[in-house]
Length: 553
Image 1: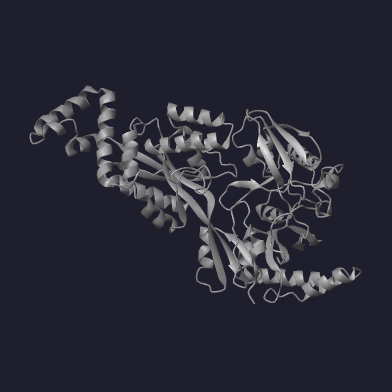
Image 2: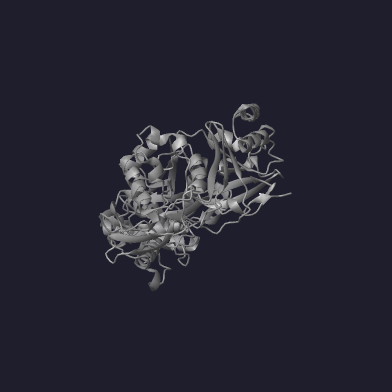
């Protein structure tokens, strides 16, 4: 959106806000006067934006920008912290049964709705039922394994599961809504903003003007430990994501969440602070195990050893990526930072390559290849006895002459295209020929599905649930031991057991070179320097810690 239109939006908003509510209470009139002469530089509000909401019911909303705001108004049973681990929200304590099929939960005795009524077990049960009745809710996958809720009393209940789930607690992060406020409403009424003004979180809705703005004030009765002097928040509604981003450099909004492609707009400007945090876009390269060479562990390790991942990521992603060895956020409790990835070492890459080629060719049992190798070995008179089992450079070149790997990548992703071409160059440095095919979305999907590739540069969005099984299974790795580990993970009934199995999986895939793990892209929060304090965002809750911000007078 261009700057003229942004300014027009601000002017229109000011005019509208200055003309509404003539018959309102004195306090409301004071608010209107305050907003009608609104100037972000003099404002005591923290200024945010969200896209025009179709609904502010947090269970039915599917817009991320609206969801980020709803996180300030509603709490869930558990919440995701800055390290992508879950911690109790509305929950005071909980226990998981020995068979992993049920969870007994006690709600915090001080958890209240904004009307000062207690948050109850019935609210939790109603919320789960509401998600179940609405298949388009973003939280539907989180409750699919819930069989039912047995209510003990207003603060105690048991969640019954259809089957054991090692990540059951990680899935209880959906916001809890009020049964008293919403039950009995039809499908249309339940989406209306007037029926969704009651929350239970650290901020409550002070004023809501549809398709214009929202004002949040602190919930004085919030049970959590937050600063009492936290600022009120003014949220302007805008038409699209581009408007949200562009309003920050135009100084019409205090905070925006941006990606790597937008970073250059802010880097050289003195008015802004940039907070970098680990996102959830995971980048990797997968192998086609139908290729007999790539099915060989030493051949794969030769490829991995030939790649300088740190240099590659610095060049392709301008160093805005967290190096990792596995598809989990690197500060997550299940990620093992003690495991060391296969290092860049060209000499070892060549040794791995020789071992891989020798192993594959021996298993092929091709008489012509074996005869050629034998002839070459007889000519190598200077080789010592200990080296006779190794392949010479001539032998390696002869075999490699018949190998050419196909690397596929999305033509629409410039960073991945750089990765693909850099890997191709690195492979060439150890004698492996390759070609890079930059494909459109349709052709890339087709190539992946039909396995028309040898290496594929791909990316995945990590879930709020630290379950790497979907990504591992999508790699189509031929490995019985890995399959057994994944099966053991599914049967885990405790956090300790899950952590143990995850350690085994991570160690195994690194040792076997099961795929090339690149890293997790950074995301960024840009904030106006008139704000001081520290926020602790994650990609599911970018305003986490906003209560710490004050005006830099």
